[in-house]
Structures are given as structure tokens and as C-alpha cells.
Image 1 (cartoon, rainbow, N blue to C red):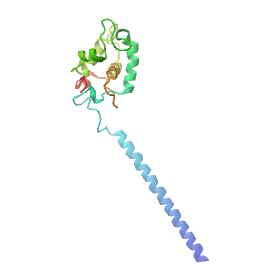
Image 2: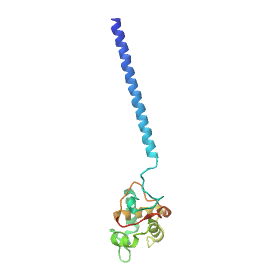
Image 3: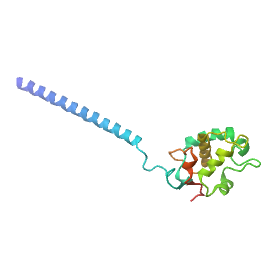
Image 4: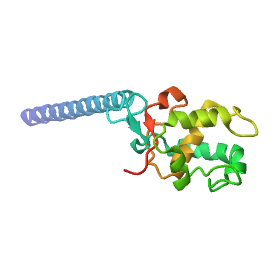
Length: 170
């Protein structure tokens, strides 16, 4: 009987040893996975939109929907009195969407539009918007003009927008 109980004890140790090895391997795999995810999250995106470092256009997904949402709030509070809730313009204020907007801005850079908003708007209190509010309003205008949103926000600095052109649909 001693032989059988000895085999059972050895078999039980082997079984526990296999379970412990599995636990260690699974824990190590989980740690490697977690570290990989952290490295990917911390690394710059390889397929990021082309702004602000290289030439591009508004078709390169240069704003986020969240940013456009913030821009809507600012627009409603500071711009809609003149440009209307539908951005079609009221009286002398120009339309900020559609063919009239494209007629005025096609071929220009986002930097030029940014500076126009930053320096001259709202017309009853020019220069009162922060640079972030200007970028957010610009994102809102891009959304209304059916340009595609992306995963990176439009920079709140005119100099970062000099290579991004407003262009009609390709």
C-alpha cells in the first residue's frame, strides 16, 4: 500500500506543480499584455492625420466630434446671433456652411479662417474668444460642412494650421 500512496502523493505534487506553472505563465502573459497595451497607448500614432506637420486638407480628418460639440456651445453663445442657428447667415453676416462658405474659403488654409475668427469675431466683441474656443468653433464649422472627423483635435494655434487647406470634395 505504501507504493500506491507514494504514487498518489507524487502525482498530487506533479498536479499542483503543473497548476502553479500555469498560474505563473498566465500571470506573466497578463503582465506582458498590460505592458504592451500601455506602450501602444503611450506611443505616437503611426497613422495619425497629417496635420500639423505636413501638408494636408480638411479631408484628412483634422478635428474630433467632441471638439465640434464644444464649438457648437461657443457658436450658439457668441456667433448664432449673426450667423444663425443653421449657419446660413443673417443680414450682412455670411453663411458659414454650404456653397457660399466654400466660395469664400475654398483654397484657403485653416490658419486664415482661424485668424479671421480670432481677430474679428464676434463682431460685437472682437478677440473675446480664447484660442481654444476659436479652434472648437472652427471644428464645428468643419462638421457642418460635412468634412470628416477624426481622432485628433484641431490645434488651437494658427501656426499649426498653415498647411491644412479648405478644399471642395475630391
